[in-house]
Amino acid sequence: MSSPRIINLDDGWNNEIKVKAIDRLEDILNQDLKKEGSMFSPKEYVQTYTTCYNMCTQKSPYNWSEQLYQRHGETISRYLSDTVLPSLRDQHDEFLLRELTRRWGNHQIMNKWMQKFFMYLDRYYVKHHSLPSLLDAGLKHFKSLIFDEVKRDVANAMLDLINQERDGAIIDRGLVKSCVQLFEAMGMGCLDAYTLDFEEQLLASTQEYYARKSAEWIEGDGTPAYMVKAEAALETERERVTAYLNSASEGKLLGVVETEILEKREMALLEKEGSGCRVLLANDKHDDLARMYRLFGKKSEWLQPIADIVRRHIEHMGGEIINRREARVEGETKETNQDPDFVKELLALHDKYIKVVNEQFAGNALFQKALKEAFVDFVNRDVGKFTNADLMSSFCDRILKTGGEKLSDEDVESFLEKTVQLFSYLVDKDLFSEIYKNQLAKRLLNQRSASDDHERLMISKLKARCGSQFTGKLLGFRLWVRLVVAILRRLALEACRAIGVVLCYREVEGRSVPRRFDPRR
Image (cartoon, rainbow, N blue to C red; front, side, top):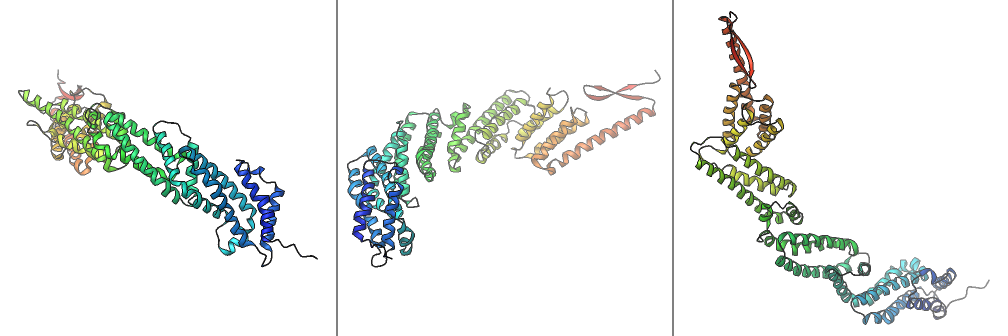
C-alpha cells in the first residue's frame, strides 16, 4: 500500500490554499459581496479544509501547523495594511464611519472564513501551544492595524453626529450604533476600548454641549420653561442610550447632563425673578412644582434648597394670617377667645400645603419637616391675651356643643381631624389639654354636648396623636362628669317624690330639661 503524498509548504499554500480560497475571498470582499452563502460551495470549502488538515497532520518534518498559523496571521495583516487602511485614510466625518463599518463587516466575513479553512489549527495546534484562537488573532490584527489608527477620528465623527442630533438634525442612528458595536468588539470581551476610546470623549463632549445650552436657557427662559427643556433633554439622552449607545453609559451620561443643567443652575433657577420657586408656590403652579421635584429629587442635597424655600414661603403665609388676627384684635373693644375665622384660615393653609407636600413633593421627608417647622413657627405666635391653644380649643367647643356651628357629621369629623393636626404643632400641648378639659366639663354638666360620638371621636384623635397618657385624664374626667350628672338627677328625683312633686323630662333643643308636674292639680 502506497503512503500518502507529502504536501510541501509552498506547494500546498500557493497552489491550493491561496489560489483556491484566499485570493478568491479577497476578490469577493473587494467587490462588496456580502452574502456569505454564495462565496464557497460545500465542495470548495471541504477541499481547502482537507488541504489544511493534511498539511497539519503530516509527520515531522512535514507538519506545517506552525507555518500555517503564522501565514494565517500574515494574510490577514497584509490585506488590512495594503487594502483596508489606505481606503480609510482619505475619508472624513460621516464618510469615514461608513467606510469603516463596511470594512469591519468585510473583516468579520474574512475572519470567519479563514477560521473555517484553518479550523484544524484551532482544535489542536492552538490549544496545545496556548495561542490565541484564529478568531481572536484576526480581531487583534484589525485592532492594531486599523482601529488604533483611526479610532480618534472615528470617535470625533460620531460625537459630531450626536451633537447634530441634539440640535434637531436627523442622523443615521444605525451607522452610529454600528460604530459603537465596533468599539465594543475591540474590547475583546470587555468594554475597555469602548470606555477609554469613545465613552470618555462622549462625556466630555456632552459636558461642553450642555454647559453651553444651559447658559442659553437660563439667560432666555423662565424657570418653568427651563425645567421643561431640562426634562426633555434628560429623556432624550436616556432614549439615545437605548437607541445606539452601550447601556453602561446611561448613568454616567445622565449624571453629566444633570450636573450641567440642574446642579450648577439650581440656585439661579430657584431664585429667578418672576418665575422662581416662591413664585410657583404663590401662584399654585402644581405641575411646575412636581416637575421641579422630579428633576431635583435624585439627591437630597439638591432638594434641601427647595425645602428651605417652601418653609420660608409657608412661614410668610402663616405670618400674614397672624397679622390679620392682630389687626382684628386691635380693632375690637372687648377681646374674646372666639376667633373661628383665624382657626379656619390656619386649617385651610395647612390643608393646602400638606396636599402640596404629599402630591407635588411625593411626601418627601425634607418637605414634611419644612411644613412642620413653618407651622410650629407661627402657630405658637400668640396675639392678644388669648393664646392660640385657647382659640383652637374654643373652636372645637364651638362645633361640639349644641347651638354652635351647624355642621353635618362629616364636616364635624373633618374639622376635628384638621384641628388635631394643627394642635400637634403646639409647643405647650398641656395648656390646650387644660382648656379643652374645662370646656368639656361645661358641655357635659350643662348638657350642651351635641353628640357623645363626636366627643369620643375627638378624644380618640388626641390619643392617636399624643398617646393614652395625654388623654387618660380627659377620658376619666368625662366619665366622672357623667357619673355626677346621673347622681344629681337621681337625688333630685328622690327629693321631689318626698314632697309629692314629679319631675318629667322633655327634650328641648337636644337636651333633657326637667319640668315641674303636680299630680294634685
